Image: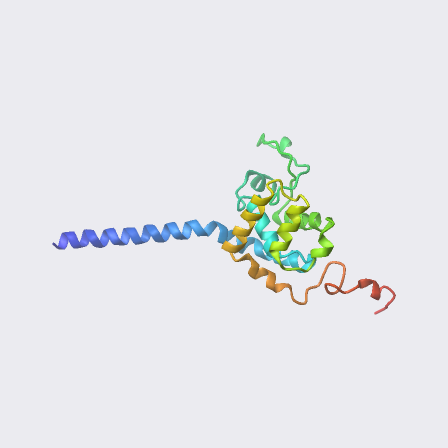
Length: 191
């Protein structure tokens, strides 16, 4: 009887450890990604008015949570096409995607691309990620269209990325002291 009780305790302990390890591993990749790249996305949001949830969500999908070959080899988190130096490397991997020196450069280039689009000025400072995704999709940002919106929305909701968008109050923009403030009013002013 004592022997059976010990086997039962060992089995339960092993089961609990296995389930605990599986649960923490399954959620860890996305949570680690958010923890690592949320500061970059939040900083870009504060400078550009593009919601951090959109920046993070797009990067998570486009880079396979940082695991895609283009992300690992090129630091390309957004699938931006351009020049790279892979053909000169020993990897023998050829790609049409742009190479960046680091993650921050890739994130900044994504913001630059978005800022160059017609819809940017209409959406700048709007923290409604659904509106951003719909508009980006409408203007042809992604080839997958509706599936792209669905995938990014799932990631935004699963990891509660919208919480980073609430940091937008009293934000300073690249070109103006405050969103919506007409910097041309200050052109003649001297301080």
